[in-house]
Every structure is written in C-alpha cells, then in structure tokens.
Image (cartoon, rainbow, N blue to C red; front, side):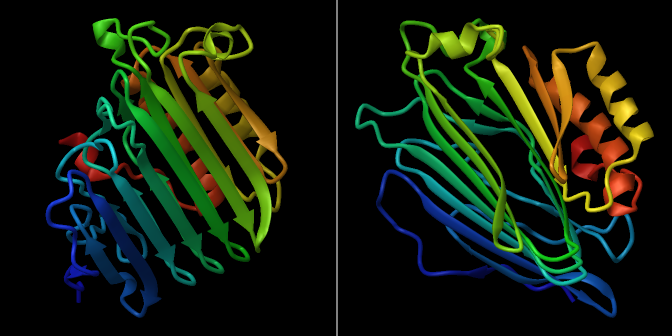
Length: 294
C-alpha cells in the first residue's frame, strides 16, 4: 500500500522565499521495496513510486512545482534507502536557480542520501541551470552502509549557453559553491569541492580547468569492493574518447566527468556511462525512468 504524502511542520505563509524539506524512506518488504515515509514541508514532494523494473526497485520522481530557486530559498532533501531496498530518484525536468535579488541571499539546496546495509540508491536528477547573477550553493552528502551501492550524478549549466550568456561575463555576478561528500561506514572516502565566481576566470578558462565550457557533469559510482571489470572500463574510456570527458578510479569509486556546451549532451553521455556501470555495481540492466521519455 502506498503511503500518502504527509506534511511536516507548517510552511511559512508570507516570506518571499521557501524553506522546504522532504524526507523519504524506503524499506524492503515481502512485496518488494516500498516507500514507507514521505513527509514534506513546502513545495517539494513525490507522488507515488513507480516499478518499471518490478517490485524490488522503486523509481521516485521528485517534484518542485516552482521550478527553481529564488533568493533565500533553502531546499533540504533527505532520502534513506532501508536495508536491502533499492530506490532510484530523479526529476521530471531541469532545476533552475534564478537571478538573485539585491539582498544577496543565497539559493541553497542540501541533499542527504543514506544507504543502509545491502541497500542501493541511485540519485539521477536532470540538470540544474544557473541563471545570470544567481548565487547557488549546492551540497550533496552520501552515507553508505556495509555492502551498499550508490550511483549519483549532477549536471550544472553555468548561465544560458544557448543565449550566449556565460558565467564570466562582466555584467553579471553569478556564483556557485558545489560540494559532494561520500562516507562509507562513517569514514569520508570522497570529497569534491567547487567554487566558481566571475573573479576566478583562470579556473573557468584554463586548459586544466573548465576550458571556457559552460556545462559540467559528474557521475560517481561505488564502492567497487571487488574491483571494476576491465572490459567495462575500456567501454567507458571509448565512450569518453570523442568528447571532452574522462573516466577515473579513485579508490573504490569510479568517476565520469564531462565538460561541454550542451546539458542534453552531458546527460546522454552520463546515461550511456550509467548503462555500462549499473550491471557491474547493481547487477541490473539499465532501465531509464519513464518520465524522461515524456
């Protein structure tokens, strides 16, 4: 039986921004993976799980009706995959961080993902678009239990490349602070930090930096406690060879990185990488969420 969405504490009524929270928990039952907790405050929620792969893997679509964040918004998303359960979380459309107001308040999103023992979680939102003069802070923290498995990606578009608007234009003040921390059994194993602003044009334009590209994507998968199949690694390297992309192994985690000018191209590359990685890590073939086809 699907559990209805339950509100947390009452949302603010008159503030010009949202402090929204979402708490999701899955549990493995005799009937498969079930969403047993779905609590929200503000315009951030899911409706019901979908099961295109059968009862043991739930697909959840994260809904944010405003479609983007304004100054002062703070979105907190907590997803917990209970022991032996498997959940894939995505979004029906791109997220947006709009132009900041003159008050300079940050536009913040904090994602905390907890994967219990023998559980699996896939975090695969569509891209986040930073509008000119936005002030984004995007943090993701992953806590992995014993024998757990995780695949996650993030794609960010700096400015509006199709309109010729770039992060380092002199007439805008876009900033981005982005972080990813992954803990395995309470030990920090991966720590990715990024800080971009118009003043650090060397990082934006250097050959060892962003090379002037407005779109970047990162997929991280693991832990691969038994190593990663050499043949699959070769397939990933071939996939990345014709683009400004690369694959690397960092301890027990595999990373795929993309730089380019198109969010869709980034997503297609990471989807192809996911299709190679998923059978190795999750023992499941790729099954794209149906919402992506609409």
